Image 1 (cartoon, helix red, strand yellow):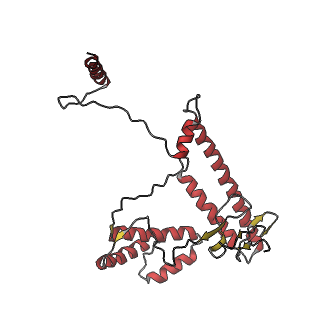
Image 2: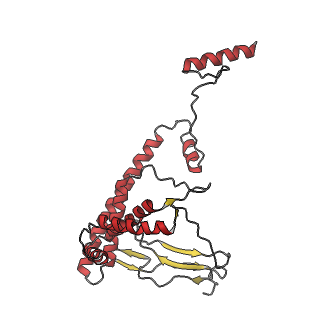
Image 3: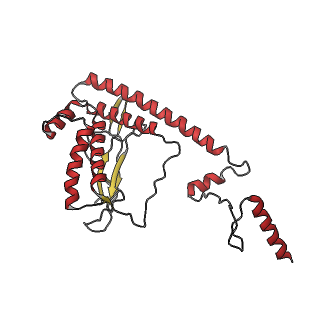
Length: 272
C-alpha cells in the first residue's frame, strides 16, 4: 500500500463476516514495515463470538531466536520403562470400558467401527481423552509442582450446565459448517445452531445479571464502587476474625467473654 501498510490476511475457508443474509471478507488486518515479518498464523477461528463478525487471531513473534522453550503448566508425570508397559495395559482396558468394546476381536478394528458409527465427535474425543488420563493416573507417579503456580479464577456464575450448553452449541456449529454437499441439510443445521446460540446467550445474560445483583446488594450505600474496584484490581481481601488470645500461662481463651476480659485487664495495667 502507498502508506507503507501491509495486509496480512491469509486465505481461509471461513469469512470474517457471516449473517443470515450473506457472508464476505470485509475486515483487513494491517501491519507496518517493522511488524509485517513478525506477524504469523493469521486466521479466522470457529470459536463462538455471539456476533456476525468472526474472531480474528494472529501471532507476533518476538526476537528471541528460533528456539523457544515450552513451559507446560498442567499435570506432569514421572515416567519409566516399566510404567510405560503398565500404561499400555491400563490404556487398552480404559478404551474397552469407555467405548464398550467387550468382544474378542481386534481392538483397532472394533474401535474403528465404533467411531465410524458414532455421530458425536465431541463425545468420542472426550472418551478417548478420558481413557488416556485414566491410564496415566494408574501407571505414572505425579511430579510435584514447583513454587510457581498459576491460579485460574473462574466466574462465580459459571456452572456445569453452561459447560454442557457451550459444548452442545459448538458441536452444532461444527456440524452445520462441515455440511457442504447438501444445502438444504446445511440450512436446517444452521437454523438449529442459531436457535441454540440465542438460548445460550440469553441464559448467560440472565445469570450474569442475577450474579451482579447478588454481589451489589451487600455493598454499602456510602461507597458502592469500593468493593468493585478492589475486586477488579485483585486487592479484595477477607477480613480475619480474632479467635483466641494466648495467655501468659500458655493457655488460650475459650470464647468472646474471655477475650474481652483479657483485653480489659491489659488496658487497666497499661493505664496504671
